Image 1 (cartoon, one colour):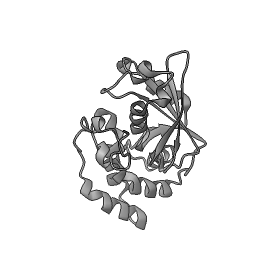
Image 2 (cartoon, one colour):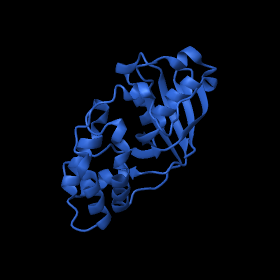
Image 3 (cartoon, one colour):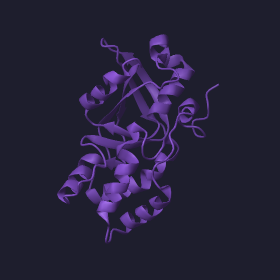
Image 4 (tube, helix red, strand yellow):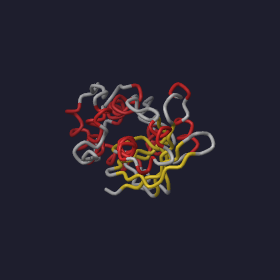
Length: 217
């Protein structure tokens, strides 16, 4: 039986390994209201908060998986201010499978698309507020990052996604203010995939699994 993704969108075994927040979540609503009002915005303070909440999450520092979607309103309002794109033609996300089943695709391919447990695993990696890229090459490089080479490498692809925050414009905006703040990477687009459906899984000659998804949310 497949778990209820609406009640537990990220795989329970991944949440068991989730880190504790290192930022104060109680200030998020205040930041959102300031950005929405659009007057006397303390961009340095807000940029520092986003840097601490988002930029280091791959190092298990910032806002954890359980609370990450609380950033959506803040990112949405900031995207309005920096005049970021609201949609991309395609976006890509390079990842490795989770530690609890790091070679699930190797074990099940080419029947992975019919394996409910594998689909749960993949959906959990695509779900929610995540960093994607509109550069296939950048996402591919991240997927093949050597320190994680013992896990199956995945390149997610999604067509016509809605963008929550276009980091290209956000990075340029902060650069124009001459503020030494790192809220994200150039080429990054932040998506909030609410209900991912795995459409297709293909393995290429390099052993990379190309996983095409749709957001049914």
